[in-house]
Length: 286
Image 1 (spheres, rainbow, N blue to C red):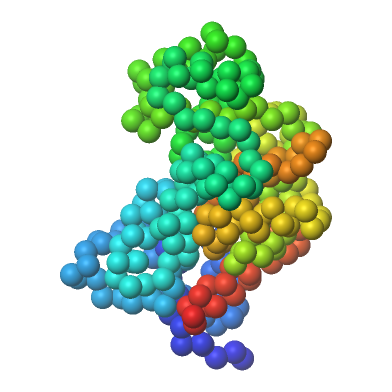
Image 2 (image 1 turned 60 degrees about the horizontal axis):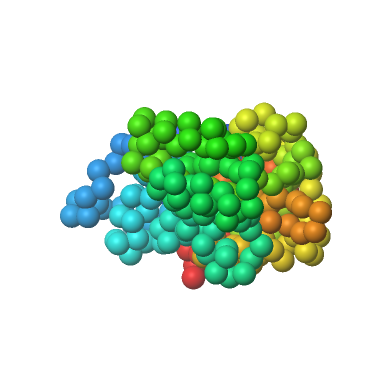
């Protein structure tokens, strides 16, 4: 029987999904001292907080909850995976695109505007229609719109300006990429590629939360290199990198800092949860 390592780990969550259950089982299998923290029922007061952890794995469903809790624990001197810097770099899609561009990593042409006139200028700069409007922050392929002409653009922008939240007033535009009925989700941990899946669908939104089917993807050197560079650009950690294929090259679309991986583990046979736990232990010891 394995002995406990002495390291104190915490899993910070808001909902226990299958992904979190896999992590908990893996921690139990390795006899680790893992505390389960529901962020919704904590009082984040630095003067009354008494628990110390060597590392905290942030897996909150709400980005806002997870980010604020991460800031709290970091200011108390605890290590959080992923860090607040990495979380912000990935959650803000515009910032992700800026970092990828800054590091000369192939990504989709993009622009950010705040009104209709500038949006039409951006359309010209991006090479014309079609393009995609998406929230600066969001997940699961929600609130994405494919825009084919000026009429559609005007209608979508008016709805966002009148009905949307303040965050939706920022209009993040990407050139539409005609994918081969799929994209690639690559799991990268500690700047090393762990495994990857294709997400196949006839719809232009290739997300398993929207019905795409997961299939194993063999990672070649070219795909591995671009993913490692993308991981480094946002600060590393535990990441899900979304890749588009074109005739000539791979393009990095988005990077997820609290990825769901149950489908990846099921399809590839790679124990992603074990890799996550191992990385947490390494960070805790460092």
